[in-house]
Length: 406
Image (tube, rainbow, N blue to C red):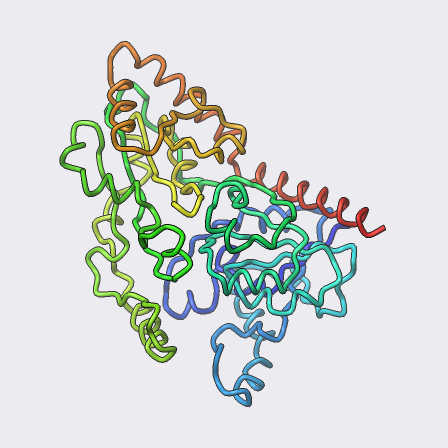
């Protein structure tokens, strides 16, 4: 039986609802929950949670004597989180580091730093998820110290991300690529002929203020195409229905600044956790309905080199997706002109492509692309399919790792 060991699983908001989310009554984006559910339902897999000494999540930088005491509560916190998520003790085995064997696959997450702090000492095949990659040097140092055998993500950062190539130049290993998975609610419900011929543009505009990002890209905006469309929405009105939104729109949430002291940063975290009512307009409409209202959809990619999960959601709703020619759609097996409409990222080319597909004589071609994209999403972007392929890729990489050790 294959053992899959997550490090501090109870602290991973992409897999379970964590303690802080319960306390602040915040929603969770369970972007990898499909993987955990698949593993739990697989009789050939035993899922384990290795809880290291950093596994208590509610305190990080308190004085050592206090932390020494609080760390003893990490196992109680795990039991609380699992119970609240409806996961029984029998489903996930809690283990110690000494229980890990070379035959295990150990998984940590870049977005959950406490899952990486002692990974260097683990003598097993180690895989690290790079979801929500930011490109900071501190992350690179932590991951390099963890000494992973493979990285996995929704795109090959080594190929698509300039900031990854610069700050992770030390990593010469394999990248496992797995696609995003849309929530089950994203479905095709409206016939294509009844949809509006404009392009539905959606996605949040966020900003990165750390020096590495600014050094590489010059501007703090992480989704410049979304920002560009929002800035030109009046000019694009006949072509694009703009539903893009700035992350800090309609809110008094505090921005995190590089010059903030640790105390100032903590105060902002505390304040923002209690003021989550931002983007009221953005969350006022039903995303599934909007995807179904339009024939074409667009979710601007991140300049970091990552597509947005919205492209999978739009395709799952039967819209013809338009995206930049960056190579990562092809990594999923998609073909430009067959499963999606490609463009070069400029406003001029975007207008030209939408104008072309708005013409009556091109409606057949547009519908063929939308249908091919929809079928591709159903056969490649479903949770059970993606999870099965991800496990198989991890197991194959583990076999190669073992062979290299012989």
